[in-house]
Figure: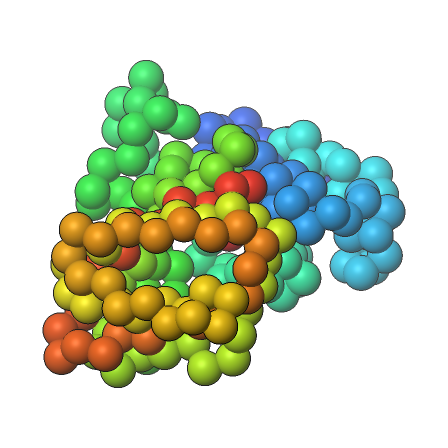
Length: 198
């Protein structure tokens, strides 16, 4: 009973906790970090980080904040929703059960369409508010593709701007990019990233 009282010593039992463990492991791997590097940055032992990644210990809320800051992801990524039908876990994501990332204040709200981060790619539904833009160039060691479901979307890839509309798509790998929504309506883009970075 005393083990359950400690938020960092509980044994993970449920499927949501297994998703959390897998997501933390996937984020560490895609960023090329070792267990020892993570442990050092978090001020924890290698054994504890290993237990978290294997679903044997559950991190506290402050630990999750530290993981989110370390990986550069919103903490909301670590909170999954219940899957009502067990046979759908890890396979199906229902529209009302997506994990939401970002806020409307940032001009970009994203929903994870993939069931978890354990595969070789992730799929995200990105909604860009009118006038929203990524001002500073970004570059990731990933292959990325997108499909514009609605609205107008501008993307600059390796210094070249492309204006895209509903039904258009794009792909690039490891190149610098920026984006903006030049329209007066939200732009909805289905974004695929390999390997997962969220």
